[in-house]
Amino acid sequence: MIIGSLQNAGKFFSLHPLFSKAFQFLEDHDLMTLPDGTIEIEDGLKAIVSQKNGKTKEESLQKFECHDAHIDIQVCVKGKETIGWKPREKCFSPKGAYDSAKDVTFFKDEPDTYFDLTDNQFVILFPEDVHAPMIGDHEIRKIVFKVKIS
Image (cartoon, rainbow, N blue to C red; front, side, top):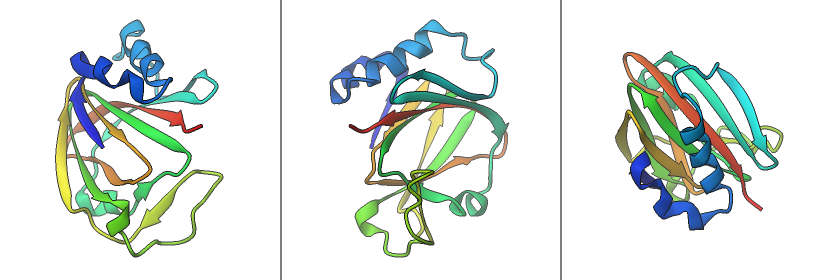
């Protein structure tokens, strides 16, 4: 997992060939006017834009998740989002089998730690990062990039 501010995102471009394109998308668009929904940027890269009320920790833990085929870049555009996190190797209670169609495994385990993202901060979540996003008591505007792992 990597947490950072958008002004320092360039330091991570070498980690995946699509990272620079995801962050370029942020520079090229007015993030406050993008409509909610999925935007296909190119093969292997899409953005999911949402603006919703935050969830309680208990609600978010219903979908304590990780992905096998994608890296998430989650960007807080406006608000304060709390995210729960735990390394996958410490999660022992899956809720079911991996869903390859949705690229997700859910766990009954609970996060080891919580951290906050505020305006113009991001987190990069790799397959080994189990996460519970969207925790907050107010409206959160965010963009999640789904970056396909080759």
